[in-house]
Length: 312
Image (cartoon, rainbow, N blue to C red; front, side):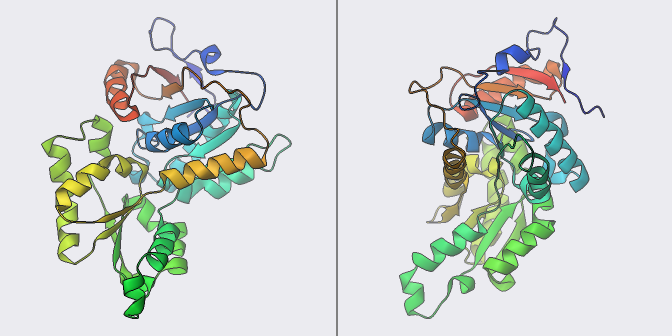
């Protein structure tokens, strides 16, 4: 596998064009680089767009290697490093690893490689909301506290990919912030594929979620940590499938807040007061499949987007 990006042949209308991605030579006006194995990271990018409307976003979907949740950790780390380096060469001033699997397997390596250099680039990751769930359940369940029930005794389920759930970093989160007896670790096969299709309102999406959700509801679990950025797009489907009050712990807004804090602390917030007209999207997919990806990702982004191909 080559470590260098390649330009798709110019005969393809979706070829990668470096000049379209280098937005400004000044660091503060540069884009925020966001990457995931597919569409899941768009949930993070949407939250960044909402909280930081003056910032440019450069999004890369590594669809040729998706999903990361089923890949060896070594490959995920290799891809994360290649993509981070690629986004930085395009002027990214901060990188968001918008994938739970890539974060728990690779974030330490990326920070060593890119934050501790002569030209450091801040790296922000995501991880299953164990800490957030513990805080919420400790502060918003007064009735439980009156009964002597602690947050660690309140049952909850972590919904994630198989690779995320088996990592050492994730297991450390569990042991640090809760007890094993109160947490159900639930792999969710099929969820990523539903989101990648962009068809969130059809029977396939509903049935896929119901198959996982119903057994957990029968165990009287009503708090669910969404441990994959893809799953955020299924929040409405979760509510419909449950047909009862449930609590979903999502991390896209806290991640966007962390992005703001890192930009502020590094004094690289975009000084422009006019929101950008365009964000930028590229993918490692087969160019013949890009029209399908464009349609699906446009649904998830909430506006029409144009994808460009890059070989990394």
